[in-house]
Image (tube, rainbow over all chains, first blue to last red; front, top):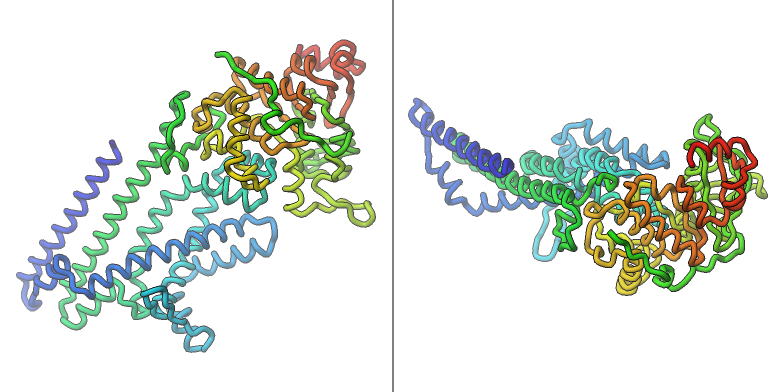
Length: 295
Length: 275
């Protein structure tokens, strides 16, 4: 109940910010030298051009793919960081150290332009079915994903540590290998701890894709930046751009809230006594987790 | 609450698993240290096929540590532990002079033959009772899912929990969880079962149902090592009782010998406190 209330208050906040922006737009319209063209603002929100739609999709798709790469790399880096074997640990630590210790903007520029001009890697394009992925987009996704992996590593590690060591022992005593133990026993339980911060990471990812403009990728920000450059209507277009991002993150935060509420429900159910067999939902499977000792 | 523990528990897994050797567990001069603390001192123990050995002793005596060494959840610093004639956890190097830890894959294979039941059950909370039981047979033994389900249901039935197959561990009582944990270990058809204080985390009214399952297993000929404070169980079920203190086996014998006429002062002192 509390969660749904905060959800609607979030919506109200978003609405408020939107209204303020609109007020600002009209206010600037009244002031002297800048000739405001409100149509640019309204049209790019209400009747977005194909270029804007395209930028929007690119932002969404790049965010999702990069986040997936980040999660996968994060799992490997977390496991590497906790490995008994030194070189795995060192490799994971160096990876995390470098990608968390340098600005993403520099990473993007260095691994794309830097590598290209030194002739180390010429990023290839990629054709996936009907979709033609440009070299810079591929590079952008990969670099974003690799960067994200370094941040996910700590989140995943915290998740793994949160799982009762007795679980690992039980799995081992049944003859499971380390890999099986991780995949089948530890990681599914670690997910409970990983998912909430993962949602925040994705919120960040949606906004961080705007940095890809330096690779000349026409995602949301670069599309608007380009529009504002060609019309000199920076205020209108960039304001509209901000509102598009706000809509993306708002939709996502609703979705995230919904996921987290479902997860919370799963843990509450565990207090119920010996109810008969029930058909388990996703959350139940993931979340029916409490120290088995407490009765 | 009445608990239906069925006879023919091992029938659910196709009869008594046959150990390959007459002596199923053969521990020789096992030494273990936690840092500087010497927790196992030249421990020797043999367990024969179909024998039930109960290890007793004050807390901190090394009982639990010892059975955890038997399936290599703990490393040892010297000595040898053989299960089914195979050296557990290590291979010998330099003509037997040195122990080198075995590869993880080999250790995992050895553990398939050794069932373990924990004090805190350690059921997988993200899986139903049935899924807990069939997890290892399917993903470790490579048994087909359908076959595993048939076996898993039979096991659940024999431990009196047929109605709970779709229930998650958090919705079960401690006694029910422990019975499922026993079924889970049995599903791997182990040659040996280890019980690490299986009733110590249970409310008193649930101890009986778990001991009942263990008793039934022992009668059907499972080879077992049980670390327990349940003296009644030891007296009734054990073929042999082993008394440990300060990391050493200080006395062993039949229940009658140990409980009736202990020879060691420390055994007498311990028993007088606990009985």
